[in-house]
Image 1 (cartoon, helix red, strand yellow):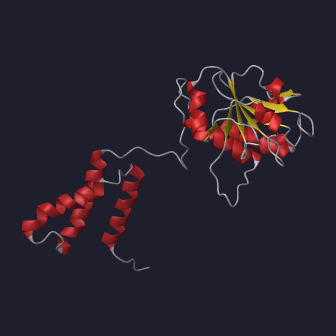
Image 2: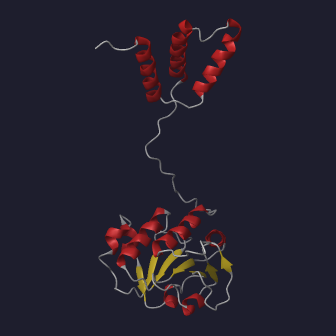
Image 3: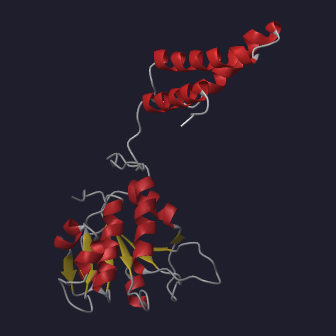
Length: 246
């Protein structure tokens, strides 16, 4: 669940349930779970939101609906409006990174406003905000969809210094095995040296010690795990046997 120090994501007059679901997915990826909806066009709940959320059901289940932006941010001390234009309203303009640092350092609840997919926030919406958040973007193609905008702000928030120590992890394609014991590495190196000796690899004798040291240094760098060492020793054994006759 969202902490009271986490910013609130406010979707103002969102049009498609799919986009609400995608925004929820983007939020939960970076530890944000409190979504507020202002006058969603197709009502709420919306059956199209669930599949698009891809498992971020807790965000959708706890989403609150408001009639106006003012009601949605009434308990927030700081309101940030995401928009590419100032729309005639003079406010401090921040990048997502700057906004995230403000949200992490200034006390009180923070809300981030995101406008409708087609038109963005209106001037009256922006007028309620303390700051404007603008994403530096290609001036020849400045089109971000709702979920993209949400994920940008959520990601920057996740990187900002925070006394709560948000528990985010760097995913890997698979669980990494620990490095193999030194004994296994030594066995592989010894096997390779035994194979190289008859080939004259360590000659002349005056260079043998330095050559062995360089070989060991090179083979120590990768941090082999036990499966990798077993595989490499199998390769060496196959090479030592030579071509198969069958």
